Length: 477
Image (cartoon, rainbow, N blue to C red):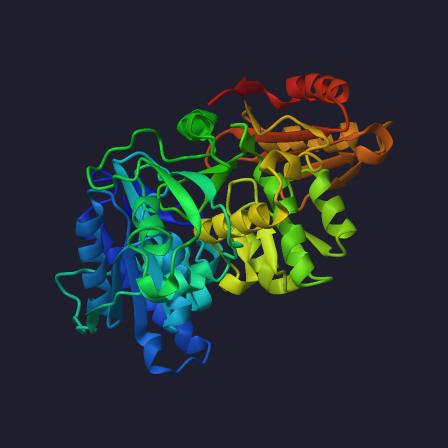
């Protein structure tokens, strides 16, 4: 049963049938053993290196799971710093701010309310995935027996870090005096409903002063265990309330957060959703102005415009694999000052290479206010190519299809396309034929995911029509 909730990058399942309180204790015990050993192996000997930060989201099951998780950590010998309800990005901050061995967030992110889970980070808030610790944690958790284990009674304390966290996040917000921006924020009944007021709104520390923008709140209530809409801004239908409110209130911009508020999507003043690759390009220019010649990481599914614009601004583009584990590694390995991916995760060197929805919003508001231009005008020159968006296809033999694509469109084919396999198969015929595509396998389903871009709509439609029959049956979620 325990193995069914361990995924590639986190632990997640429906409560209480797949994930229950007993398992939370086991996972706490296993995570503590791994995190303390990892810190010791790295030669970390500070007193705080036996400390593990724990936070939780607003789900009805989160208090009980958090309580049992904490018991498991303490029974193994880890000390717990409980920071209560918070957004996931606050865990990353707390691990670094307090110099701890790691952190665990009790959350199921954008999943429905009957789900819950755990996101685990180690020293410096480095992500723990299947290949970087989750397999060890699963093994430790499966082997421990609560009835026979010798409990070690680690220390427990509660900490309020909202002042320090708000100072950190607000350090990325630089709005000029004058008429404030009007900003719609849809918290999706998730943790943005707690974080936004405490960092930017009426509950923010008084010593920080006003945030200098007007907030129009949507779905900030997060105590009833229900969602007005699925807390997943990647689904267009979940963005409609934000889009409608921007138009209704004549707002400058709108943001829709996911359940644990570590990512958000933006809507321009015309009510149009802005692709996160286009935002990556826009924000990259902001950071390159501050750090000339710096490296910028971007999701390999992003528009060609992102790489082109980074080079034009004097930066060095770093093309990365999909997923926060790989994006954070790209920032660390290449010293990138900023990175972004299509899922709405944005990463910042000044935030310990970690992602933050609040910092992404702060940076975009800064760019918008200082430009004096509507967001649609800032994005227009970036959106110069035509994209398919991510389209899923069901197929039994995913590897066979990828092999066929490499033969049909690769360097030995009539098209002589460039092919790489950094993440799935990327076919680049952009220079000669005006298009490129990435096709990736789903980790959990018999699906291939296609992202296609072309210089014009005619080419996009033609190539999509040629590729689709090769990929299987189209699946519309």
